[in-house]
View 1 (spheres, helix red, strand yellow):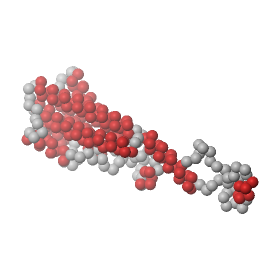
View 2: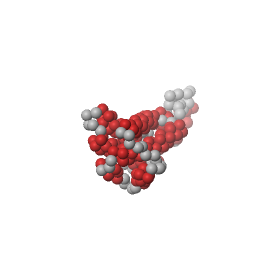
View 3: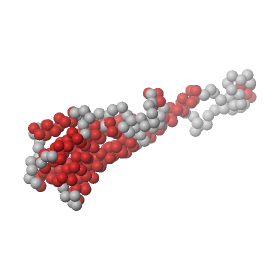
View 4: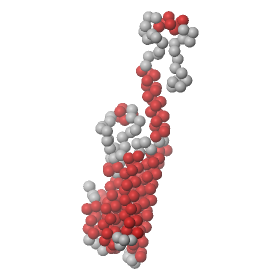
Length: 241
């Protein structure tokens, strides 16, 4: 499975290539199109159903598993939304999502071990069956509902383990991509510097030289330039490009 980022979400309308270059904060968000988010959401919904069936609702384990699954989903969304102004924050939050899913994976493995139920390897026929569902279009929790709500504890827990592995794999790919982009392009500070420098350079190219009270084409402009000891007004050091 490959991490797929579809066309970014455009909350303020559509922007052409030139318009995107002129924007300090680029279009961002669009997390619902991320395969990692979609899979993490299935894990969250399935975990709620699993815990309601097999884990005592009064136990800390019930709450911890549900919260770990929720954290996996929520941090992907929050990181994507923060990416417009902080790629560092996006990296951090996606890393938190990945860590939350690792915690959840251990809980499912503990569930099987403590009940002396088998943990399927990835080549197990049932595991292969569940893994192949990832290729279905428009999949959702409903795709896996029967494995969680109508199957034995062994099948339900192993099905969730397959899903958590898939979500973790996607997040690993996403993190690697974010790290490369951050290393190559920098973060918001670098973008801000480039944005201000580019805008200043365009203004200097588009604005005619300042000859004081007269424009460059005024008949008295040369006279003023010759009588003014300082010559044509020059930009201050702060204004210089």
